[in-house]
Image (cartoon, rainbow, N blue to C red; front, side, top):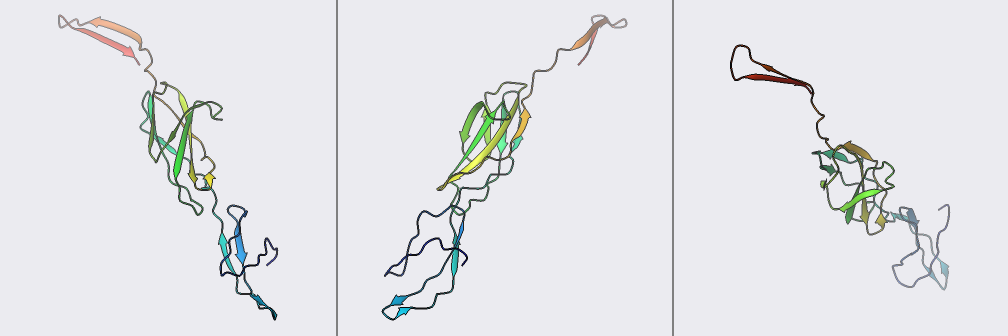
Length: 171
């Protein structure tokens, strides 16, 4: 062992250490003491304390319409404690300085009531009993906009068929 974090004395066969750092591997060993002195150290054991979940991979956006989009993501590593919640945010700002909406729930999540022809940024994060993990990388997509106004409209009466007009335009 290169550094000692804690030493404790106990008459039982188990001991709990508190105040340890999250996501840190700790190595332990034990030895007995009696009136004759201390015995040899046991072989070591180790464990890693739980930590917040890792950041999820960048989410994906699909099923984009003029006023909604669907966000999908995969579960990140839980770092020891089961994931208990997800939080997905949507914003018109890549820095998320103004968050339009935050939704909780599993993938996929649909955001509706959005403005048409607007770029939206999304990110997600996970939580476990230790706390909230970091947000994923941000991804973006734009809702569909109204079509542009047709140009160069022309109407021509058919010279060979009565009652017929040919209308054409540029999209």
